[in-house]
Length: 508
Image (tube, rainbow, N blue to C red):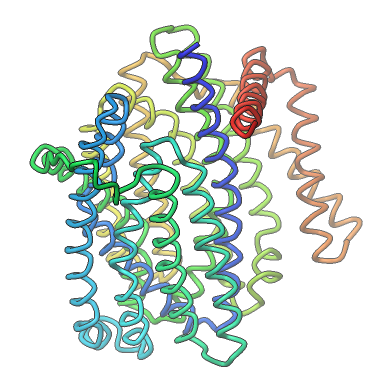
């Protein structure tokens, strides 16, 4: 019974992650669409500010977000409320102090940063000043979010991020732009949404997870141990965030904010292909962990999940190659159509990288964090060097190539090391044959839509449906689907049913 209860909780958390990931990614994409309507220059300036904010936020957190999850989970299992309280309070105080200091520095240095590195982006200074106010709340948000995760209250994190942050951000941005506040209004809307989300997360922690105001619980601090565990992790987090932000920052330095704005249409559009694979991997880690000691089952889950990720991402890539330009034109207007080629290059890099998500998680499962760290640092340095080399002559294409190449190298290192560690290769002939069948389906879809020539908006919807149906039909007819695929589908369905039953029984 305890084991079944644990699996119910895992299934519940995995499904919530899946739903939250899909809704959150789609709403974030919609938010980018709204910002892009302010114009390429303005959108580029906001994108530069967001990149800087993300780097400072990660540094200020000091890796304590991961430390919170580990130590609170352990203390919760031991029913050590004093340890939980001490971990939360120490993390909150430390992160608040650092993020406030970084916020003050960002506010004071905003003019210097703009004039020194981005002189063609005059509005960047005021955006940074507004975002500086959000920095302490962004830090605290990490504390509350990971506390909820550790205490297995992950649904409240989703409520706060999707409802309390993204939706509020979208509504306020639309309202402030309508009132004519423009770029300042959009910046204020973003900051308010971060503050609102942070406060809402704290309320959820206090009311639904753990009361920090309970005077009967004395805080037990393990500051040194928590810091020693967390500090090495901050370097890994920094390298990852730099890989994601370096292209925009270096592009803005060598070119201008308008180019950054166009490029930041390519990035979120290309990342659309990662929505479902990322959500699927939320279910993968609990499943692979559950069969860690059963080699046959372990290999089956590893191979089947990788195959599904490959199917979905290659299918999405084929569609983006054929209809990505129309997608950009419809949602972001014709002004951003030059983002198409950068989007395709980035999408190829994301497809390759997504196919080794499963390998990376296996390395984490076997505590091979050192190789992940080394590979990520190498990829980060390579990314920066390539950006500096390629952007001056190639602009957006150079930035996209730098990111795609560094992600590919990172993927190859992790894949090769996982293969060496497990003696397993999930990328078999069947997987690549499926890629060929999807290419044939894409060719047929392209010819059919060209023959019918539907309205552009109808083309977007009809081509997705047609390409999916043709791909699935060819894959089914070819006999590529195996027993493992049916077992995987059945496992996911059972997890969903278990989650629904868990929720129903909890409410009753």
